[in-house]
Amino acid sequence: MSNLIKAILNITNNTQLGVEHITNGNNRATNMGEGLEAYIKNAFADTINEIDEQIKLEKISKTFSYTGNKTNPPDMMLWNGDAIEVKKIESANTSLQLNSSHPKSKLLARNSKINKTCRECEKWNEKDLIYSIGYVENKKLQSLWMVYGDCYAADFETYQKVEESITTLIDSLDDLEINHDTNELSGIRNVDPLNITYLRIRGMWIIENPNKVYNYIYQYDKNASFQLVCLMKKSKYDSFPTEDLETLSKNGKILIQDVRIKNPNNPANLLDAKLLVFKV
View (cartoon, rainbow, N blue to C red):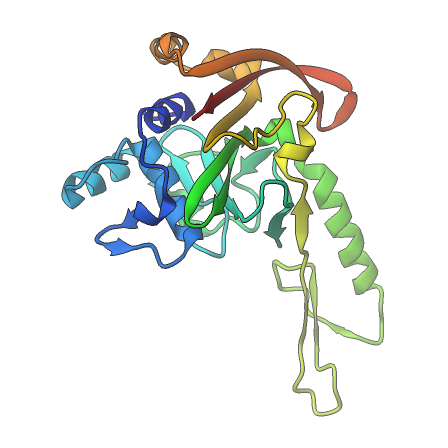
């Protein structure tokens, strides 16, 4: 069964960091976002350097229970393991555009934005979520953050409360024809006299870049040609198979640090965490 530790080791053992070389099947990725997603997928499936398409497909099938679509989170889910959301950015410190999907500490099957295929691909109610944030410049992967949602985002109820408040306020406007049957914040039918216009009301969530959020434990290295930074709670780190952790600790290229980070639900409460850094 694959996991983040295995993916980290696969990345550090691979020198091909240019996203332009990553392909989906036999076709070159049509954009750098797809190239980054394919690279992450191959890192977890241990198929970064696999050239036999049939072998690659078999490994990916055994690694992932779900590989997502463009409109619903997540981008992929490991069998009996974590979910992964991939985000591409084009500068080292730019904010992440999450669009209508608010930040998540965990992936919950009850989330209305999860589609039926994802909800039923395996038996699950909740998964840990990895945000994989790649900075791509000139078709080259400059940096990659892999941070768990429970280190990065507040609990589900924090964001749900905001969305529900907005929806309730819109619903209270008696002179509008409200569409209640939508996964968006709201919708207003028949806006004009001809009754031919519909107004979609949807969230556009944005979250700060990890380089800013965690600048008290890690400073972005402008001199590195590539840097991989991973952050997770210590309890999550300790939950990985002993064999994988021993292999990781023997890899002299990866710096493993004990750090204390702000609790996303209460910054006054510090959490024990692990920071893993690889640079070339």
